[in-house]
Image (cartoon, rainbow, N blue to C red; front, side, top):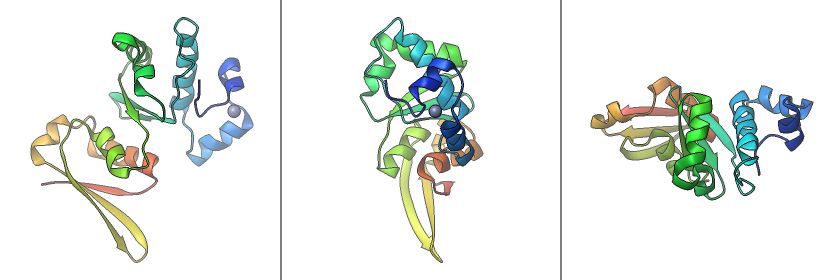
Amino acid sequence: MKTPVCEEDIREGRLCSECEKKISKGDLSALDFEVARLLARINQRRNLTAASFTRCIDLGRMVVIFTEGEPGVLIGRNGTVVSELSHALGKRVRIAQSSSDARKTIADLLAPAKILGINTMYHEGVQNTKVRIEKGSIQSLPADLDTLGKAIKTVLKQDVTIVFE
Ligand SMILES: [Zn+2]
């Protein structure tokens, strides 16, 4: 299994000083640690050796888990793994593929809302990305705009503005 937390920390149930440093820098979250521990527990019963994730994003009612590997491993046969995670976290869980493509990552975080376009502009050396969403999709956003904006910033390390058209 490959997670952003050390294997030893998962076994011992506490973070080492290196991982604590990552938490204070925002490169790791308590949720990442929780999901890593849950997967280790599930791995004792089901084979999740091939499972991997890069980070988890809390959208309030939903957690999005990004993986660089095959999403099917984290979903499990008939969705068994994802439903165990969902039950343990008390939230809906969605598995998304990590991508260097910002557009795909944003689409994964905002799904099933329909994205009309993503525009990146530079103003005095500062990058600003505007995500245009179809007005009719407001109701289908997985969380409020503030939460989604923070989630995108966590993953892409850039500020985005979400607008409806
Ligand atoms: Zn560690």
